[in-house]
Length: 315
Image (tube, rainbow, N blue to C red; front, top):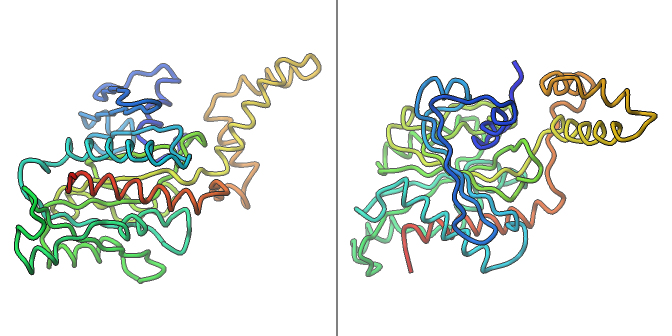
């Protein structure tokens, strides 16, 4: 069966919109909270909607900021503020003191996959201070206990991420878990420009075909909030988009008009499978990332960590 290879619920929903298919049990709400910024909430409310979308029931909030790759401190600070507000919607941060474990998923040795570890490096960690000096150590109205861990990947540790996290949870007993990971997108225009926040948890590596055990409330026993930014797109998608542009150009050229029309008659699924076969076996498992990904990941990790810090420690 043809499926869009993406971690973003927004892109999965867009495919059905493009096919003029209404998905029952799925609601979409769009807001524009700031200049050149869009927040889209995809709410999967029924099991039928979850089955069709290929994602668990829950809330998927996508923050799109087309200028997120630019080095504009004010713009990134506003993105962090919006992220903080979204976290407050999903967690009772302003109602009670929480103990929260931040998990930086991914491999810090592979730049496109280093987002999670770098966010964890930039977090304001307070659990050890509060446990030693008391709940009023920071002089705040609510002193949330924040701890973090970077569990690495199976190739480094020989253990499933879930196994490591379960051991930490057993000892520290937090109220919430926030997992940060790099994602895969369907559209190149969303690379490093989109943040997805969801209360359904995450399956590490699912976007690139490395399916590990899911981190969700069912598997770890506490609510899991997942935050991610798409940093890669698969090669098949890029070729498919290029092919569509080529067909459009062919249809406007007399000599190539017939060829263009014959290709355009293929359904999107047929085009996708055709390209996968043509790229096989050497390129259909390849994922592509922007050339300035090192600077992007460094900058975006600060944006996300600042947003989480703002949510728990408003200044």
